[in-house]
Length: 178
Image (cartoon, rainbow, N blue to C red; front, side):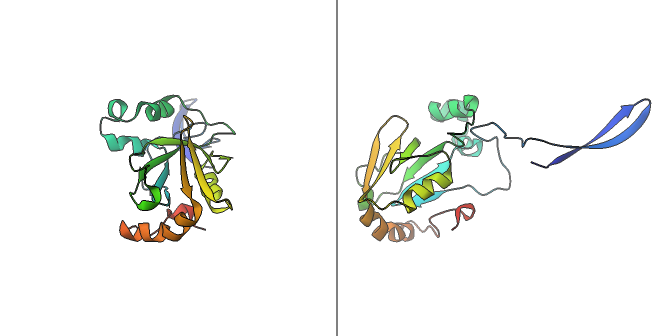
């Protein structure tokens, strides 16, 4: 928002230079943003589960993405519209295999709907749902209703060890820092 575009126009046989203030950002209304440049990816890792918002950059990791990427993710890119209830598509990208998350090692590319009973609309919702949770288990529900259930105390005790095991310096991207 507040970006401007410069135009050179011809009006009444005179060349004029004008500047127009854009009222909506380029991705306004899009559930999945177009390709972004010079922006590091947003991510959050908890108990070896790696989450990211869906972006065109992520889809392009498949190369011929419109044919090769998971079809539900491609559909969100083409047809998804942001609403007050859904600002981003949050994807469980990968599970970094560990004893804490046994049974879920093959889960990937799952769209997350709820975490610990809270509806997930943005990455900040996801982070908050994990970090504010006081219960015994973390319960993650995907768009199809499938659940991941992890013991909160084991996740808390082992998350740093898992990051070190996979040589990851932080559990979150800089834009999600506390």
